[in-house]
Image 1 (spheres, rainbow over the protein chains, first blue to last red):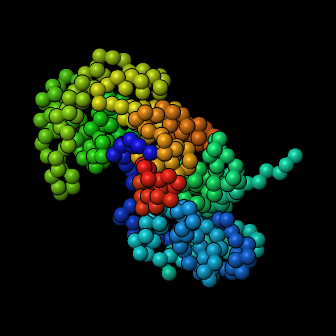
Image 2 (cartoon, chains in turn brown, orange; image 1 turned 45 degrees about the vertical axis):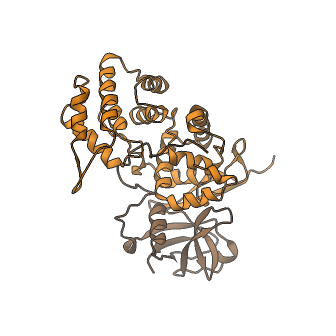
Image 3 (cartoon, rainbow over the protein chains, first blue to last red; image 1 turned 90 degrees about the vertical axis):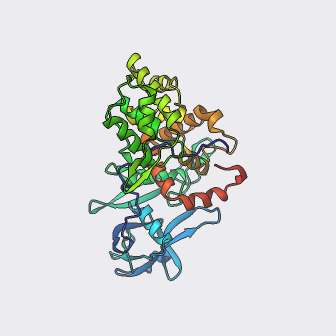
Length: 117
Length: 262
């Protein structure tokens, strides 16, 4: 790829928005309710209300990442919250999060609350 | 009739579960471009799902800088080119406050105002390229006074802006998108180009100087195929790509033939 130029070509106004985040975000007080996406049935079937899953950035073989929730080191599903960038930036800045299961899992959608441990 | 499989995105919105169905990852959204998994960053499905998850309330979509086409031209002309956004905007606000955007003021008057240090927070900073930009700005404001702007058509407006000194396809598209909220033009800056590369929409052989309008056609087609307005896509992609810089660079490094990447 050549000739892509230097600057962004535009000006950011209005902050990070729904998906965004900025340097002023308080990573420690962040609380987000979301759902578990792409659930791994073998892992999800073991989940119970109030279980605490670890939240991690998963690096794929092709260099592509995703944000996942794990139970005992196994992926339970992916996380795609509205504040994705904020969470990613906070994790990369050294913060840790857990995803607490909010509902009884009986084959339906798993709701979780992402927050500091 | 074969069953159509989907990948399902769920989100928690307004106290309820909301779902979006997208084609399976292996399905092509455009020839040679697959949807990919929505939870894998930077795939076409990822961008469509982000657009849906972030919703209309997102401030990604607040992008207009000025209060009129004249002001938008001035703001965009004074920004870009790797200049920190706040410096470009500070220069624009000074021009506006001092009434230097009327198309009557001389190049020297504008240049003198650009040479004076700008106040950004508690810092005094100098505007880059005051000589060149003052000439471009003075000429643009004069031309704006003399010629009617074809605001009835995004493509005609962009073509008209391309006749201004100092305005290339990217800046012309930027102004057009900001003023007309058009989905017919693309602002191919570094972030959008990188996103296009990661989606497989652009190839390493594309050059934005040589292929701007071909690349734009591909992006327009992509947005149409995804059923999302290009201006909305553009704002979301730009915002995410800018803030996910480290992951973007890692993903670009992993691309095949990435030696000469964006």
